[in-house]
Amino acid sequence: MQKKKRRTLNPEMISIILTLAWPTMLEQLMQTAVQYIDTAMVGALGTQATAAVGATATVNWLINSTISALSIGFLAFISRSLGAGNRKSARRAAAQAVLAVLTAGIFFTVLTVSLSGVIPVWMQVQKSIRSLASKYFLILYLPMLPRTATILFGTVLRAAGDTKTPMKIGVTVNAINVILNFLLIYPMRTATVLSHRILLPGAGLGVVGAAIASAIAFTVGGVCITIVLWRHPLISPRGQQFRPDAEILRPCLKVAFPNMLQRFGTSLGYVAFASMINSLGEASTAAHTIANTVESAFYIPGYGMQTAAATLSGNAYGARDSRRMKELAAMFIPIEILLMILSGSCLFLFAPNLMKLFSTSEEIIRLGSTVLRMVAVSEPFYGFSIIVEGLMQGVGKTKAPFVYNIVGMWLVRIVGTFLCTQLFGLGLISAWGCMILHNLLIFVLFLICFVREKWNPLAA
Image 1 (cartoon, one colour):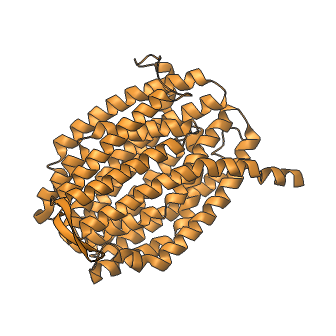
Image 2 (cartoon, rainbow, N blue to C red):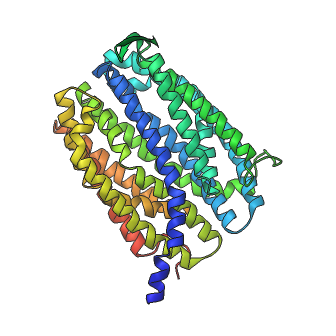
Image 3 (tube, rainbow, N blue to C red):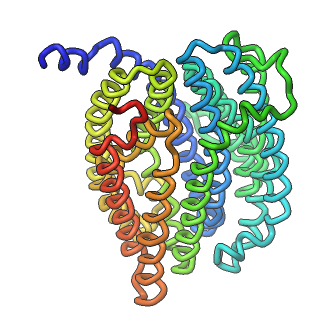
């Protein structure tokens, strides 16, 4: 028994976990930092500007999450292939990922551009800001092909254990975005530095400038990560066939399709959720947008660890190492819960201070602080769900998470929010209460799955 305990606390494996997780955490931290900066910079233009940018944010989640779901199929296939020592198969899968980028990128470009004028209407955006929200959305999605490459190729690299390269490219993209924001959002102005007045350049484009900055940054990121993948020594697609390969695509899509339905269904739920919140008025929309931005930073430990969990469980499954699968779960879960307790505590304590970074409105600060403190309490439970889902993604078990998330989103969050906001006339706090109930239900379902070892295909 004592020997088994020592194996469970294997320092070498903990080191591997953290080595894989920290670049992803840093990458997401940088992305969140830029979201903070974007929100603060746009927020300086007023509540309408913040609402115009945030009103279609959930559509962004819908599209990005659908592409991310497709990438999960390649992650599971490549990590298992490399775990089994089959590098040739992994490179063939990388070539199929190139086809997936071209297909999905072109499809979503046509879709988003053609719908940019009507999406703010569907989202029940206030009429006074619909035109601005539509322009922002259109510009943001013109470079959909490089955005798709960034998501999908980044996952391919992580599946091969390379989490540092996507991180470095993410840092570069975010730096470009921030610099261009300063140049494009505000008009020319003067600043005083050490008693010297300095003329700062600026295009004065406001919300449109923020969209242009993001579009350029996304394009640079997509080009860079494509070049890196092409030159990668382990999984470069060079020399491979670029026509559809059923032997690769079939297992990839078998894993990806349930995850894609899950993410599409839950993200569509986010759209419906945001639409109901938008109907509550500009103050609720702005508070919701800012609170979502603030909250995203505190999920970074969870999703960074999830990426490592998916990669390592896929490797262990490919090597048919049942003992290692159990060791991974025994180490990931306590680390994750501890991290989420720490991040949730910080969110609870500093919620008002964080809201003040983005708004001077007392109503928005009060609303945002309340909902952030509510959700902070549920973070450790959500962290457990994230890790178990990551372990399941790595081994290709995506059907159960699909069912859990769809049931939680639509039967709890959406129905509950509809009843609270549309029928009973309650506000933003009730909507976030429904969101927390959704997270707790997901926790219970994943806990049952974990205890019964339904997540582990190698369980005796």
